[in-house]
Length: 333
Image (cartoon, rainbow, N blue to C red; front, side, top):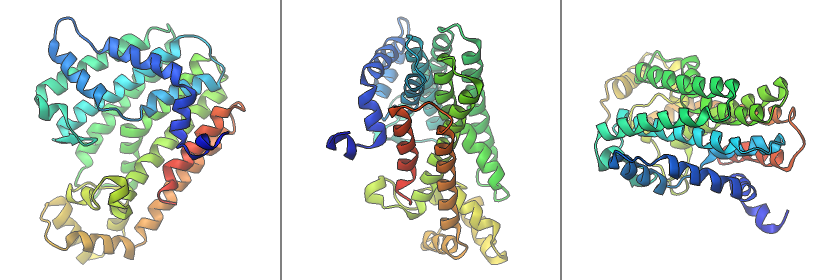
């Protein structure tokens, strides 16, 4: 490994190694995002493609397939499927959350309207199903269609659990496994399935993706209350201001006395936030050890991801996936 490789981030090294196949994925995505009948689809799709992003989920599908020795064409179709599902959920998320920006750019619902975002999201879901049947593999279809259903369940569960102080860590984990981890897990697992790996190794790939996704979200929660805004691009306390019940808040509420619970009821459930409330909230998290406990959980999930890799073939990609799990938690270690 040269100096350039040594200083690259793990997903950048993966992208460089798999650049040819990821180029094919991009070409397929652009081709299938277009519509002969509805120009609005092309406009919204062009905006989404132009937003960039790491394309981490399709990258995981290509990486898993290559690591498992697959040499056919269909991992490209499955990677594009994963990206379509992800993009469709982002379009719907931005409508539900009434978001105006994503990655520093106006969201589609802000540039056009909610109806366009929902309908183009539906179109991308339909395109994803067209792509996932291409390999003619029922197990692949089962995994990806199930992931789409679980993501929707996670969204609905989050809607009902939002701003409800009775939300437990168990419910939080179900939301995270639905919203974030389900697609990571499906993305890696189908790479092994299309390569006809033994069932144990398919399970290991699922476990890796699931654990990586959970760790990814917990780190996101933690950076909101303990990160460096200059590095993360997020203002400290955005989740608190948006009244989101993230893991550090759930852990703090669970240990709250009557006075502290009244504070959380006012700020989170009722949305009555005043000057100094964020600082008080951060102080309560520190008092009850919620930040350290959340950090420990993120590291434990990353370790679970790395352990799953030990059941998979020796390969340079396996080392990169190991490094990726470390990278996800590096900012909080």
